[in-house]
Length: 255
Ligand SMILES: [Zn+2]
Image 1 (cartoon, rainbow, N blue to C red):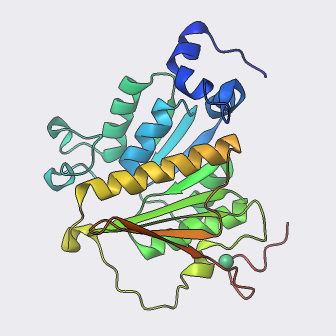
Image 2: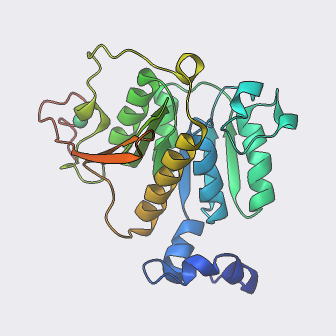
């Protein structure tokens, strides 16, 4: 172990240190880790909050939007006074209040594929909290190119889904193996469809759990599995995701 935690840190993180699956080693790894969170809305809020509270050393937050009144029903990092501020700025302020030890890098702009690739290269885990297919595919490409694990979540109406695409092992499928870009998906977004407030908390907290497990190498990740939640009946389904041997994104990558 390189650095030693002081007494205050041992207390702050004691409930993780008490877990034999985590302990001091995992906590130290969290402190040395960097998570990239793309999208600081309904999903990105709980992801950022849990990773900050758990002591992940650096968080890069990417979102070009500003807080508006319709966000406050479910985006729990933001309060009424934050309306009009950029989401990354408002989130960074709350994170600093929760855990001043966390270094936050703010990107209040739209990032293209090249920028995403650079950001993914600098990160240990990437969490996709966005709400459109074009960005999801760009994030996936960046993660496959950089060889970084991706925790992907989505929430709309009462339906949620979560999966992990771990490009560190080339045998694993990527997001494109599951959702081809040529597929004519009807884009469904919160702005027109509505979203059940606690759903984003359930899915976002699950993404945070997977991100921490990946950083700690604890347990078994959701790599190769897709979880689907119907919050109206509170039923979860699990689907196996197969690697597409002809996938244009991940099949040709040789590492
Ligand atoms: Zn693929």
